[in-house]
Image 1 (cartoon, rainbow, N blue to C red):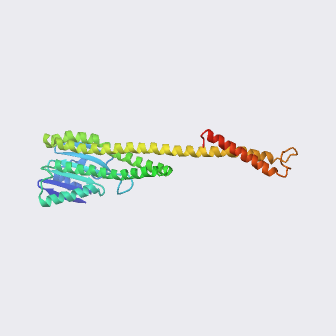
Image 2 (image 1 turned 180 degrees about the horizontal axis):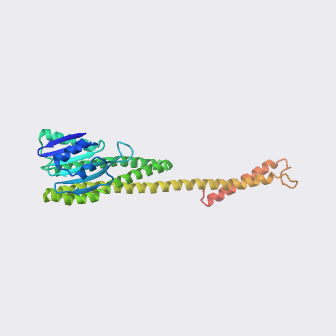
Image 3 (image 1 turned 90 degrees about the horizontal axis):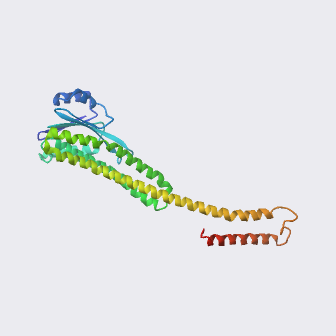
Length: 303
């Protein structure tokens, strides 16, 4: 599906799962190289940037978590010329769809805040895309806040899986946007040749948006590590406390069981067995031993 937006002298072509006929039309209209045109038909595996005499070709992947509840990558291929920009995607990308509405409104109202060439359109587009990644991180922030509450509410065991899921989401987001650093560094250099030195601050500002999001990912990753350490400490403490109680119970029951077993031996010389009050004597002996052990444990501060 091909959508065309025009604002002043800048044309934006947005393609979703393009066909060969649509690609061939753009090749004729904008003079796109055959090799790059062929790559628009299928998703790419790695982000990159290429510069030709007439335009720049970028491939970027952005994470999507919040709306899908599972991590996946969304690819955007961008061909950037002096007065045109072509974006190719293979599914609905929410921030790009919203940006198209803003671009369309500006076109209808003839506003000029989108700049005088296509480089400014890409700048505002990248800002919206990176801010959408920050919105995706909000779901992780909310999960970490919920995890923290549950950890200190005694749900340490259940939080082991929740912490691992948050850590995996952050790792996937980081792995998705990490290659952007090299792409944006090359983009800054290429943009200076394509649009002139005056565009350099805008290219750096687009890179700053990436670094801001990357820093948020790193801070959340540190929070996950801290929560995992805290959860493991509390879980270990709870397990140690359980083992301590079980050990004390074993120390209580073993001597008493030994006494009961000893007096259960049916031998002529077994004391108290044939005594009228033998049962109560044995019970009293067991109570005395138990109280002595309890007093000793208290003295040693094991209880």
